[in-house]
Length: 133
Picture (cartoon, rainbow, N blue to C red):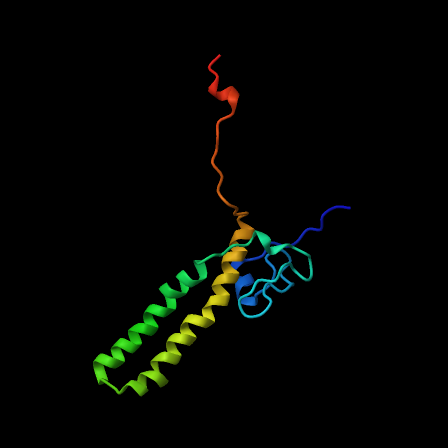
C-alpha cells in the first residue's frame, strides 16, 4: 500500500496551532511543553525532535530582555518598594518567559521535520578514494 501523501505544513503554522508537522491535524504536545510520543492522527514518531535549549534561548532573546528592562526602568524611574516589583515586574517576567516557550518549541520541532534535520555525522572518505592506484 502506498504511503499517504500530506500537504506541506508551514513551520509557523504548526507552532501556532501546536499540531503535527506532517499532517497538521494531530497533537504535538501532551501537556504544556512535553512532546507527545507520536501524532495521534498520522502516527508520525516525534522521537526525531530534539529542540534542546533552543526554545529557552529564543525566549530569553525576545521576551526576557524587554521584560527585565521594564523592571529596571520601573526601579530607576520611580524607586518603588519591593512589593510593587512583586506584583508588577515578577508576573510580567514569568508570563513573558513562559508563554512563548510552547510556540518556540513547536516551531523548532516543525523546522527539524520540514528540513529533515538530524544529528551531524563525520564524513569519511571511502577506501577507494584514498588509494591513488
